[in-house]
Image 1 (cartoon, helix red, strand yellow):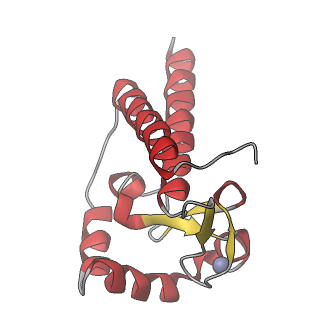
Image 2 (cartoon, helix red, strand yellow):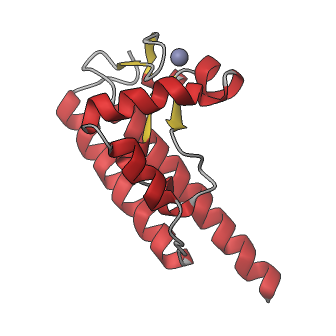
Length: 142
Ligand SMILES: [Zn+2]
């Protein structure tokens, strides 16, 4: 029983992560489908970008915070450890001074999601993704 439950939770978490990531990368894309890396300004199609977290994904309370996650190239995200210093500056430029401290504080709070919470997050971001794809009029087959 316990194992099955944890497996379901894991797969719900994975699905929530996937839709959230798609939504964030699309949010940061222009109508050509290109997004700019949050830390080095490289431009690529949003599908080739990562959704890079400023504060690590392992902190659940900021894992799905839209201010904490942006389109980021794989070089910055994977190989340069997220370029956290540059990232922290960018967060304050985008959302106002003190935002990085607020996010840091929030990340230290305990947040426990249930499997249902995660499925709700997945549903919401799937919906938002589909809506935004239409409103930006991006043709994914082009
Ligand atoms: Zn980059």
